[in-house]
Image (cartoon, rainbow, N blue to C red; front, side, top):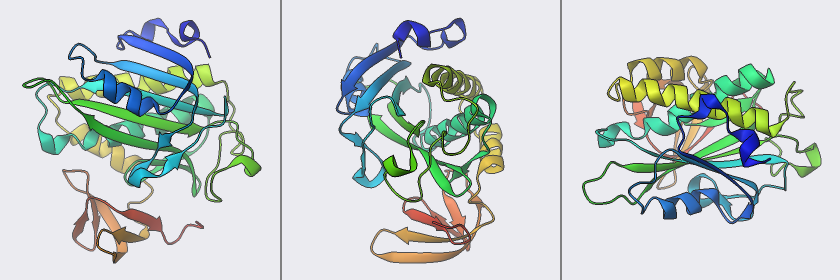
Length: 258
């Protein structure tokens, strides 16, 4: 995957798109870059990463050229702290739409922002707030790991999948990157232009989220467990289960075969 092959006119939203052969973590690299207040709308892709991180500090290792390992650095001027959580959910919506369009797979979301095909995870998203200059706009780095051509034997866990296994009509990673970045830029621009109002974004998220309406079990901090029907998400992006708002924890769809 060459930088020149990824760039295209519709991606003019981004100021930089860099491709490297290998790195420890694309998220860590862009978090370091965020110390520069001029750094904004930057994309970093790695052919492989050896110290990738998922939610709850889980490792995410990408075999060379079998996955997409990508991070984006964006700044959100004027956004309220309570709305920042919606950036990761927006990214999930963009990934689902890109995979449905470019790959022809029935992608959907598992709260908060895992991307599923059927009941199996094909992509994970990790958003991290980066250090910003005093008084500057909040900087957030969003990492995406997408399984593209992994075989069953190469999958990290049994409930994972890849685009190849799912019968995707598209596994060219350059085409996929363009689609993903185009959808993200479109969603982000609309959200920014709406002064970070979440009405339209929340409606799009709820429409694509398979967790809503499912019976779930949430493993919560403090070794607590909450079981019930996921009724929706609130204005902060928290999952509502039995009238309780869950902001962090592992959620299992009890009707799915995990």
